[in-house]
Image (cartoon, rainbow, N blue to C red; front, side, top):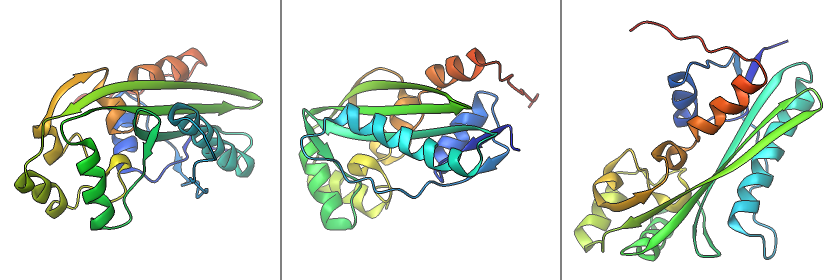
Length: 194
């Protein structure tokens, strides 16, 4: 039995989780189909995928506490997926250039029969990107495996002109809400002195 399992291979999620005093005993990526269902709204997609990830891993380790999360970037109802290649990354960045968008991250913790979940949203706006700035984002390769094709903690951070909500949510894990869930079920933080 593992006390806490992170159902994600994302190094960003792991880092954010450790930053708030929770180091998972095991990391088990949940490989699931992340294709949106017909007419599925972005927030609902993020929630469903977070629950599916946590559930899949919990089936393997039913005695453990499992944390799953998923991030979805959207412009209105339009879901902007993780780009598969540079062409898709370019398309995503052009869709976001000069516009507001919302990042939804859902976190789900399964503890026995208990399933605790929360969807958090952060609103952001990119400046109107020049061709050179778009090229910089493509060349950086930060778009790989990133919802919306960018990383707030990377080059893209220089081009975000406005943000409303917590940056950790955009990076991949809403730390305050995750802390509230984990501490609420009695999981203690382990803080080390740096």
